[in-house]
Image (tube, rainbow, N blue to C red; front, side, top):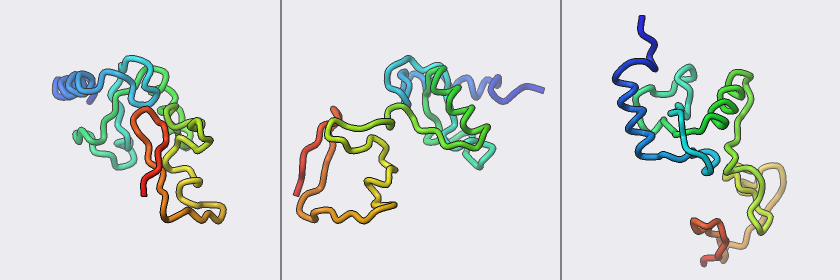
Length: 123
C-alpha cells in the first residue's frame, strides 16, 4: 500500500505549495522543506485544502510535530517574544484579548502594525 505522502497527487501539491511559499512560514528565516497541515488530519484537518497547508523548515516541522504528539500547543518562532514597544508578537496573547486582567483600551487610538512590525496609531 502506498503511503499518502508518497502519492503523485500529494507530491504535485507539495511542489505547488513550496513554490508559492518557499520560506518557512513559522520562523521566516530558513528555506521550507516540508508542507505541514496546520490543523492535523488526525484532528479533522482537510488533507487537500491548500488553506490548511503551511511551508515549514525542518526545525519548525520537527518542533510542531513533537508538540502535537505530546498534546502541547506550539507557538511559531515568529510569534514568540515581543515587539520593540513591549507588546507580545503572538496575536492570541491575553494582552490583546484582555484575558486574565482588566484592560481598558482607549477607543480613540487603535494600534496598527505595518509589515516591518513597527507600530503606528490610527483613529
